[in-house]
Length: 401
Image (tube, rainbow, N blue to C red):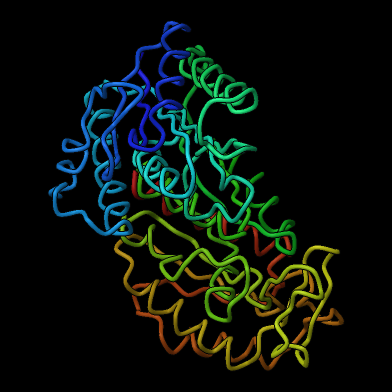
């Protein structure tokens, strides 16, 4: 049982040495890796030198004179190192501590190992926007409270807690899985919950285990990371709303590559247009001023939704058509002619037949013939729509077995 403790020993040597000692006192083996590039290491002698970390990414340490380039290179080296150690059976967890630079480096190593491997980062960045650090993985962030700059009565307690938490995680008995069922993923939003809940229940009665992801940017990335890691047998991507935020500039984007992982992997996927009627912002007063004349809906005090226009919907249709047309596995697109969310139904605040029609027309025009196109005269949340999607995914997965 060994934990990779990684960070810059030139600036965080005492703190990382403290983490190592606490882990050793708990009976946990440690591999201490130095990712520093400036001053000499202090506090502890590393088990893996900075030259070795850089070499994992094919970098020459002597050439890393620019700080930004150095952090990027060492992050790449840390990721390659962690992936190799895990593949060799020599890594049971990853632990780090520091500010933005150390967080970037150590979490790169954490994201390189599979979901389920313990990952804990004590960071000054833990209370901010952490999407780049977490990605689609299960990184645990612990706020450092004080800067990670020397050992004091506060920092020592927090670092000791972190070491204790990591020792507990790597020493925990494995989870009893029982009978393993084929794993499927589904994407859901508040306004597509009835659809996904009904589809999930139907799929579970057919023997599948369904993992539901909240389509908040992080959820989409997490789902696609599991696709890439080979955990899943199929995807019910009912809620593709993150594409709206990527297009228009909302706060819940999953990035421009969303809706591509399953296609690249050749996984069976059944896709729909859930919540493509909305872009997400925070509280009402955070909506950018250029959108003040748009159709805005206060979902709750912390979330304001903006209706997508016909022009935006047409572009979303073109983007989805391109992505799905490149898929290498069985793919179906379900179009709900009666609306793409609970609030896009007739009489609801985002009901906009013109915008929906622009979305549907762009999809019909752009989809490759290999994509199965299924149009139903339902709202996405009607039980008949959810049942048809579940039936199609079951058909695809059984056919691919």
